[in-house]
Image 1 (tube, rainbow, N blue to C red):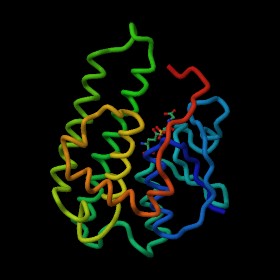
Image 2 (cartoon, rainbow, N blue to C red):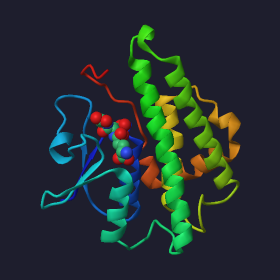
Image 3 (tube, rainbow, N blue to C red):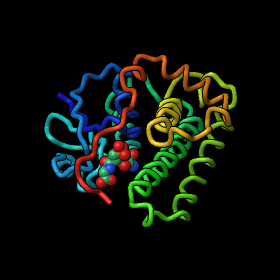
Image 4 (cartoon, protein in one colour):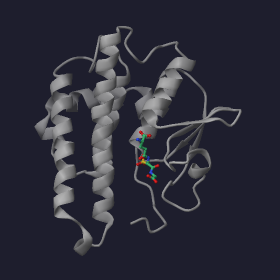
Length: 211
Ligand SMILES: N[C@@H](CCC(=O)N[C@@H](CS(=O)(=O)O)C(=O)NCC(=O)O)C(=O)O
């Protein structure tokens, strides 16, 4: 059985979970805390990050954008990327922006886990700018369209929907809902999909000292 190493808050893993669900591909969900010494993630990814997609023969694929490319190549039915090559690049650009916002949110989360006297205000401000700028660009691209890119649900919606809900987990005080009402409407539509409803992110308990 196909296996996915995942974590309850992970927006990157949520993209893969949603894609597999939307394509009807069965898999075993292995929920980990990659920050704890007990995690099996390093056994399957030398970069020690999840999500990791593990095939029955033990081969592993990691880095969510690449995992999604592998899934699209291996199971092309119900495509999640547009057929038009330029629209496909637009969708992948949206994923780059969404993942980049998530990356900034992860860095922000860990900076705030440091003792107050060790937190860098400059570093926090820099990550905050990336979150705000990325959200502005996603709001500009999405506008009031039914789907973020193209004429149907796909990768760009998965990436945008996951970062918006991840904000609630890692940066609940961020005013994105008042700043970008079009993203609020988009998020509500996406979260109503069964693949989203089944994968709502929640914080995890991290037992080990990480920073
Ligand atoms: N670019 C990677 C990012 C993955 C990532 O940062 N995963 C985190 C977990 S989570 O933030 O998604 O919940 C991780 O495994 N971190 C462990 C580590 O960085 O050592 C992807 O898209 O897959």
